[in-house]
Amino acid sequence: MKINWIVVGIVIIFALILIVFLIIKNQKEQKKYTDFLNNDFKKADEEESDLNDDTY
Image (cartoon, rainbow, N blue to C red; front, side, top):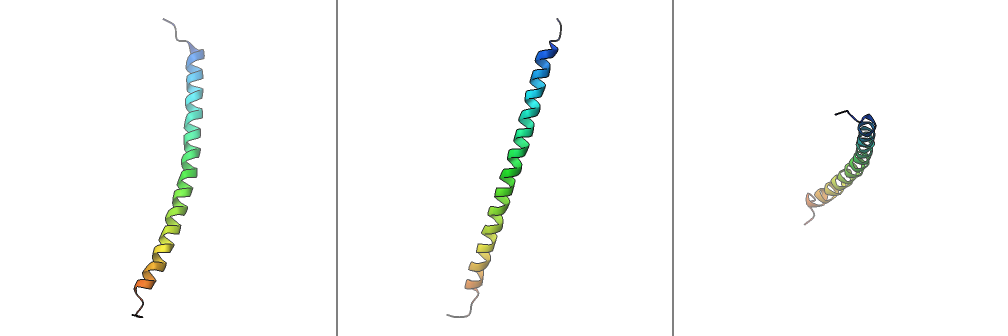
C-alpha cells in the first residue's frame, strides 16, 4: 500500500489554512471581549461612586 502524497499534502494545506483562520478569528474576538470588559468595568466605577456619596 503506497502513501498518496497528493492527498496528504492537500489535507495538510487545508489544516494549516483552518488553523490560521481560527487564530485570526480568535484574536478579533479577544479584542472585542477585552473592550467589552474594559467598558463594563468603567461603568461599574461610576455606579460605585454614586453609592458612596454621603448625600442621603
